[in-house]
Image: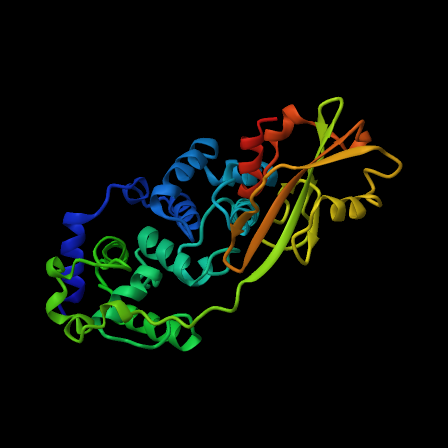
Length: 346
Protein backbone atom coordinates (compact mmCIF):
# COMPACT_ATOMS: atom_id res chain seq x y z
CA UNK A 1 0.00 0.00 0.00
CA UNK A 2 1.27 3.46 -0.90
CA UNK A 3 -0.25 5.21 2.14
CA UNK A 4 2.85 4.93 4.42
CA UNK A 5 5.28 5.82 1.62
CA UNK A 6 3.28 8.91 0.60
CA UNK A 7 3.15 10.10 4.21
CA UNK A 8 6.85 9.61 4.83
CA UNK A 9 7.75 11.29 1.54
CA UNK A 10 5.56 14.28 2.46
CA UNK A 11 7.17 14.39 5.91
CA UNK A 12 10.69 14.50 4.51
CA UNK A 13 9.81 17.75 2.76
CA UNK A 14 7.35 19.40 5.16
CA UNK A 15 8.40 18.48 8.70
CA UNK A 16 9.07 21.23 11.18
CA UNK A 17 12.50 21.54 12.74
CA UNK A 18 11.96 20.68 16.41
CA UNK A 19 14.63 19.81 19.00
CA UNK A 20 13.10 16.49 20.05
CA UNK A 21 13.32 15.33 16.44
CA UNK A 22 17.08 15.63 16.55
CA UNK A 23 17.53 12.98 19.25
CA UNK A 24 16.60 9.46 20.27
CA UNK A 25 17.43 10.10 23.94
CA UNK A 26 14.45 8.56 25.78
CA UNK A 27 14.56 11.20 28.53
CA UNK A 28 14.22 13.98 25.94
CA UNK A 29 11.49 12.18 24.00
CA UNK A 30 9.55 11.31 27.16
CA UNK A 31 9.77 14.89 28.41
CA UNK A 32 8.57 16.31 25.08
CA UNK A 33 5.68 13.86 24.84
CA UNK A 34 4.45 14.60 28.37
CA UNK A 35 4.63 18.35 27.76
CA UNK A 36 2.84 18.08 24.41
CA UNK A 37 -0.11 16.19 25.88
CA UNK A 38 -3.00 18.70 25.75
CA UNK A 39 -0.52 21.40 24.63
CA UNK A 40 0.27 22.97 21.26
CA UNK A 41 3.86 22.77 20.00
CA UNK A 42 4.32 26.55 20.01
CA UNK A 43 3.34 26.73 23.68
CA UNK A 44 5.18 23.59 24.75
CA UNK A 45 8.53 24.26 23.04
CA UNK A 46 9.80 26.93 25.51
CA UNK A 47 8.77 24.72 28.45
CA UNK A 48 10.69 21.81 26.95
CA UNK A 49 13.78 23.97 26.58
CA UNK A 50 13.43 25.38 30.09
CA UNK A 51 13.02 21.93 31.66
CA UNK A 52 16.10 20.58 29.90
CA UNK A 53 18.12 23.59 30.97
CA UNK A 54 16.98 23.17 34.59
CA UNK A 55 17.05 19.35 34.60
CA UNK A 56 19.51 18.11 31.92
CA UNK A 57 19.08 14.46 32.95
CA UNK A 58 16.44 12.28 34.56
CA UNK A 59 18.69 12.21 37.65
CA UNK A 60 18.45 15.98 37.98
CA UNK A 61 14.67 15.85 37.66
CA UNK A 62 14.40 13.06 40.21
CA UNK A 63 16.45 15.01 42.76
CA UNK A 64 14.27 18.11 42.49
CA UNK A 65 11.36 18.96 44.75
CA UNK A 66 7.83 18.53 43.44
CA UNK A 67 7.09 22.16 44.29
CA UNK A 68 9.95 23.28 42.02
CA UNK A 69 8.67 21.11 39.16
CA UNK A 70 5.15 22.49 39.57
CA UNK A 71 6.50 26.03 39.58
CA UNK A 72 8.40 25.42 36.33
CA UNK A 73 5.26 23.84 34.85
CA UNK A 74 3.09 26.83 35.79
CA UNK A 75 0.98 28.00 32.87
CA UNK A 76 0.79 24.65 31.06
CA UNK A 77 -2.25 23.38 32.96
CA UNK A 78 -3.23 19.76 33.57
CA UNK A 79 -0.82 19.70 36.51
CA UNK A 80 -1.18 15.96 37.06
CA UNK A 81 1.26 15.66 34.13
CA UNK A 82 3.92 17.48 36.13
CA UNK A 83 3.29 15.41 39.26
CA UNK A 84 3.48 12.18 37.24
CA UNK A 85 6.61 13.44 35.49
CA UNK A 86 8.36 13.91 38.83
CA UNK A 87 7.10 10.60 40.26
CA UNK A 88 8.23 8.67 37.19
CA UNK A 89 11.65 10.33 37.17
CA UNK A 90 12.22 9.18 40.76
CA UNK A 91 11.02 5.68 39.87
CA UNK A 92 13.37 5.42 36.87
CA UNK A 93 16.32 6.61 38.94
CA UNK A 94 15.62 4.67 42.13
CA UNK A 95 14.18 1.45 40.70
CA UNK A 96 15.66 1.25 37.18
CA UNK A 97 19.09 2.80 37.80
CA UNK A 98 18.23 5.72 35.54
CA UNK A 99 17.60 3.52 32.50
CA UNK A 100 14.31 3.87 30.62
CA UNK A 101 12.45 0.68 29.62
CA UNK A 102 13.21 -0.15 26.00
CA UNK A 103 9.87 -1.63 24.96
CA UNK A 104 6.21 -0.63 24.74
CA UNK A 105 4.96 -3.07 27.39
CA UNK A 106 7.34 -1.90 30.11
CA UNK A 107 7.04 1.78 29.18
CA UNK A 108 3.29 1.46 29.67
CA UNK A 109 3.91 0.64 33.34
CA UNK A 110 5.34 4.10 34.03
CA UNK A 111 3.01 6.53 35.77
CA UNK A 112 1.57 9.09 33.39
CA UNK A 113 2.52 7.05 30.32
CA UNK A 114 -0.40 5.74 28.27
CA UNK A 115 -0.69 3.93 24.97
CA UNK A 116 0.25 6.92 22.83
CA UNK A 117 3.30 8.02 24.86
CA UNK A 118 4.59 4.47 25.26
CA UNK A 119 4.24 3.90 21.52
CA UNK A 120 6.04 7.15 20.69
CA UNK A 121 9.00 6.45 22.99
CA UNK A 122 9.23 2.78 21.98
CA UNK A 123 9.26 3.53 18.26
CA UNK A 124 11.38 6.70 18.23
CA UNK A 125 13.99 5.59 20.76
CA UNK A 126 14.06 1.81 20.37
CA UNK A 127 12.62 1.21 16.88
CA UNK A 128 9.71 -0.85 18.23
CA UNK A 129 7.04 -1.43 15.59
CA UNK A 130 4.17 0.04 17.59
CA UNK A 131 1.84 2.65 16.13
CA UNK A 132 0.94 5.93 17.78
CA UNK A 133 -2.65 7.11 17.85
CA UNK A 134 -3.30 10.69 18.91
CA UNK A 135 -5.80 13.33 17.81
CA UNK A 136 -3.90 13.95 14.59
CA UNK A 137 -3.80 10.26 13.72
CA UNK A 138 -7.49 9.81 14.45
CA UNK A 139 -8.28 12.66 12.05
CA UNK A 140 -6.09 11.39 9.20
CA UNK A 141 -7.30 7.80 9.42
CA UNK A 142 -10.98 8.60 9.95
CA UNK A 143 -10.99 10.85 6.88
CA UNK A 144 -8.88 8.73 4.55
CA UNK A 145 -10.83 5.55 5.31
CA UNK A 146 -14.18 7.29 6.07
CA UNK A 147 -14.46 5.66 9.50
CA UNK A 148 -17.45 6.91 11.49
CA UNK A 149 -16.79 5.00 14.71
CA UNK A 150 -16.62 7.61 17.54
CA UNK A 151 -12.98 8.13 18.49
CA UNK A 152 -13.76 8.68 22.19
CA UNK A 153 -15.15 5.19 22.74
CA UNK A 154 -13.42 1.95 23.68
CA UNK A 155 -14.46 0.37 20.39
CA UNK A 156 -13.14 3.35 18.45
CA UNK A 157 -9.82 3.37 20.25
CA UNK A 158 -9.28 -0.32 19.49
CA UNK A 159 -10.35 0.01 15.85
CA UNK A 160 -8.03 2.93 15.11
CA UNK A 161 -5.12 1.40 17.00
CA UNK A 162 -5.47 -1.83 15.01
CA UNK A 163 -5.63 0.08 11.73
CA UNK A 164 -2.60 2.23 12.57
CA UNK A 165 -0.68 -0.90 13.55
CA UNK A 166 -1.60 -2.50 10.22
CA UNK A 167 -0.40 0.54 8.28
CA UNK A 168 2.87 1.25 10.12
CA UNK A 169 6.08 0.81 8.14
CA UNK A 170 7.88 -2.11 9.77
CA UNK A 171 11.27 -0.89 8.59
CA UNK A 172 10.79 2.73 9.70
CA UNK A 173 8.26 2.81 12.56
CA UNK A 174 9.63 6.03 14.07
CA UNK A 175 9.54 7.82 10.73
CA UNK A 176 6.01 6.65 9.98
CA UNK A 177 4.69 7.64 13.41
CA UNK A 178 6.19 11.10 13.22
CA UNK A 179 5.02 11.52 9.64
CA UNK A 180 1.36 10.71 10.27
CA UNK A 181 1.24 12.96 13.35
CA UNK A 182 2.86 15.85 11.49
CA UNK A 183 0.55 15.30 8.53
CA UNK A 184 -2.48 15.61 10.80
CA UNK A 185 -1.09 18.70 12.48
CA UNK A 186 -0.09 20.59 9.33
CA UNK A 187 -1.95 19.20 6.31
CA UNK A 188 -5.07 17.35 7.47
CA UNK A 189 -6.03 20.11 9.91
CA UNK A 190 -9.23 20.04 11.97
CA UNK A 191 -10.80 22.96 10.09
CA UNK A 192 -10.48 24.03 6.46
CA UNK A 193 -7.70 21.67 5.34
CA UNK A 194 -6.40 22.45 1.87
CA UNK A 195 -7.36 19.19 0.20
CA UNK A 196 -6.37 20.51 -3.23
CA UNK A 197 -2.69 20.07 -2.38
CA UNK A 198 -3.05 16.92 -0.28
CA UNK A 199 -0.89 14.03 -1.55
CA UNK A 200 -3.51 11.57 -0.26
CA UNK A 201 -6.48 13.15 -2.05
CA UNK A 202 -6.89 10.42 -4.68
CA UNK A 203 -7.56 7.71 -2.11
CA UNK A 204 -9.31 9.82 0.55
CA UNK A 205 -12.84 8.46 0.97
CA UNK A 206 -14.04 11.41 3.03
CA UNK A 207 -12.97 13.83 0.30
CA UNK A 208 -14.71 11.71 -2.34
CA UNK A 209 -17.97 11.69 -0.35
CA UNK A 210 -17.74 15.28 0.89
CA UNK A 211 -17.42 14.26 4.57
CA UNK A 212 -14.18 16.01 5.51
CA UNK A 213 -15.95 18.34 7.96
CA UNK A 214 -17.90 15.45 9.53
CA UNK A 215 -14.91 13.36 10.54
CA UNK A 216 -13.68 12.24 12.96
CA UNK A 217 -16.85 11.51 14.92
CA UNK A 218 -16.71 12.30 18.62
CA UNK A 219 -19.48 11.73 21.14
CA UNK A 220 -20.53 14.80 23.08
CA UNK A 221 -18.89 15.17 26.45
CA UNK A 222 -20.80 15.41 29.71
CA UNK A 223 -22.27 18.78 30.62
CA UNK A 224 -19.68 21.18 31.99
CA UNK A 225 -20.18 22.10 35.66
CA UNK A 226 -20.49 25.73 36.70
CA UNK A 227 -18.84 26.80 39.96
CA UNK A 228 -18.55 30.12 41.78
CA UNK A 229 -15.13 30.75 43.35
CA UNK A 230 -14.48 33.60 45.77
CA UNK A 231 -10.77 34.02 46.49
CA UNK A 232 -9.84 36.00 49.60
CA UNK A 233 -6.76 38.11 49.01
CA UNK A 234 -5.70 39.07 52.51
CA UNK A 235 -3.53 42.16 52.90
CA UNK A 236 -2.15 42.97 56.36
CA UNK A 237 -0.61 46.19 57.60
CA UNK A 238 2.85 44.60 57.66
CA UNK A 239 2.70 43.55 53.99
CA UNK A 240 1.61 39.94 54.31
CA UNK A 241 -0.97 37.77 52.58
CA UNK A 242 -2.09 34.13 52.80
CA UNK A 243 -1.61 31.24 50.38
CA UNK A 244 -2.95 27.76 51.04
CA UNK A 245 -1.83 24.53 49.42
CA UNK A 246 -4.55 22.40 47.85
CA UNK A 247 -4.29 18.88 49.22
CA UNK A 248 -7.44 17.35 47.72
CA UNK A 249 -7.02 15.30 44.57
CA UNK A 250 -7.70 17.23 41.40
CA UNK A 251 -5.94 19.17 38.66
CA UNK A 252 -4.64 21.75 41.16
CA UNK A 253 -3.39 19.26 43.74
CA UNK A 254 -0.36 20.60 45.69
CA UNK A 255 -0.59 24.02 44.02
CA UNK A 256 -1.11 27.18 46.08
CA UNK A 257 -4.06 29.51 46.03
CA UNK A 258 -5.62 32.29 48.08
CA UNK A 259 -8.15 31.09 50.69
CA UNK A 260 -11.25 30.04 48.81
CA UNK A 261 -14.95 30.23 49.53
CA UNK A 262 -17.05 28.34 47.01
CA UNK A 263 -20.71 29.33 46.68
CA UNK A 264 -23.63 27.98 44.67
CA UNK A 265 -24.20 31.37 43.02
CA UNK A 266 -22.57 34.79 42.76
CA UNK A 267 -22.52 36.78 46.02
CA UNK A 268 -22.14 40.43 46.99
CA UNK A 269 -20.25 42.22 49.79
CA UNK A 270 -22.94 41.87 52.51
CA UNK A 271 -23.33 38.16 51.77
CA UNK A 272 -19.57 37.63 51.88
CA UNK A 273 -19.27 39.51 55.19
CA UNK A 274 -21.69 37.07 56.77
CA UNK A 275 -19.49 34.17 55.64
CA UNK A 276 -16.32 35.89 56.85
CA UNK A 277 -17.56 36.60 60.34
CA UNK A 278 -16.65 33.04 61.33
CA UNK A 279 -13.49 32.74 59.23
CA UNK A 280 -10.51 31.48 61.26
CA UNK A 281 -8.27 34.38 60.20
CA UNK A 282 -10.83 37.05 60.99
CA UNK A 283 -12.33 36.04 64.34
CA UNK A 284 -12.55 39.04 66.66
CA UNK A 285 -10.81 41.24 64.08
CA UNK A 286 -11.78 44.34 62.18
CA UNK A 287 -11.50 44.05 58.41
CA UNK A 288 -12.48 45.78 55.19
CA UNK A 289 -13.60 44.07 51.97
CA UNK A 290 -13.50 45.30 48.39
CA UNK A 291 -14.16 43.45 45.15
CA UNK A 292 -11.09 43.57 42.90
CA UNK A 293 -12.58 42.53 39.56
CA UNK A 294 -15.80 44.29 38.60
CA UNK A 295 -16.49 41.70 35.90
CA UNK A 296 -16.52 38.06 36.94
CA UNK A 297 -13.54 36.14 35.54
CA UNK A 298 -14.64 32.95 33.80
CA UNK A 299 -11.85 30.38 33.86
CA UNK A 300 -12.70 27.48 31.56
CA UNK A 301 -11.39 24.01 32.32
CA UNK A 302 -12.22 20.86 30.40
CA UNK A 303 -14.83 19.71 32.90
CA UNK A 304 -15.92 22.89 34.65
CA UNK A 305 -16.18 26.65 34.30
CA UNK A 306 -15.06 28.70 37.29
CA UNK A 307 -16.87 32.01 37.78
CA UNK A 308 -14.29 33.81 39.83
CA UNK A 309 -14.14 36.89 42.03
CA UNK A 310 -11.10 38.14 43.89
CA UNK A 311 -11.93 39.93 47.14
CA UNK A 312 -9.34 42.20 48.78
CA UNK A 313 -9.56 41.74 52.55
CA UNK A 314 -7.58 44.31 54.55
CA UNK A 315 -6.76 43.36 58.12
CA UNK A 316 -4.32 44.52 60.80
CA UNK A 317 -2.36 41.26 61.08
CA UNK A 318 -2.47 37.66 59.92
CA UNK A 319 -0.45 35.97 62.63
CA UNK A 320 1.71 32.99 61.76
CA UNK A 321 -0.23 32.08 58.61
CA UNK A 322 0.89 35.16 56.70
CA UNK A 323 3.65 35.26 54.11
CA UNK A 324 5.31 38.41 52.84
CA UNK A 325 3.87 39.49 49.51
CA UNK A 326 7.39 39.97 48.13
CA UNK A 327 7.81 36.18 48.35
CA UNK A 328 4.58 35.30 46.56
CA UNK A 329 6.27 34.50 43.23
CA UNK A 330 8.15 31.59 44.83
CA UNK A 331 4.95 29.53 45.04
CA UNK A 332 3.55 27.33 42.27
CA UNK A 333 0.02 28.47 41.55
CA UNK A 334 -2.68 27.72 38.94
CA UNK A 335 -2.66 30.07 35.96
CA UNK A 336 -5.88 31.69 37.23
CA UNK A 337 -4.09 32.76 40.42
CA UNK A 338 -0.89 33.59 38.57
CA UNK A 339 -2.71 35.98 36.24
CA UNK A 340 -4.22 37.78 39.22
CA UNK A 341 -0.85 38.06 40.97
CA UNK A 342 0.70 39.63 37.88
CA UNK A 343 -2.20 42.05 37.42
CA UNK A 344 -2.42 43.06 41.07
CA UNK A 345 1.33 43.71 41.23
CA UNK A 346 1.87 43.19 44.94
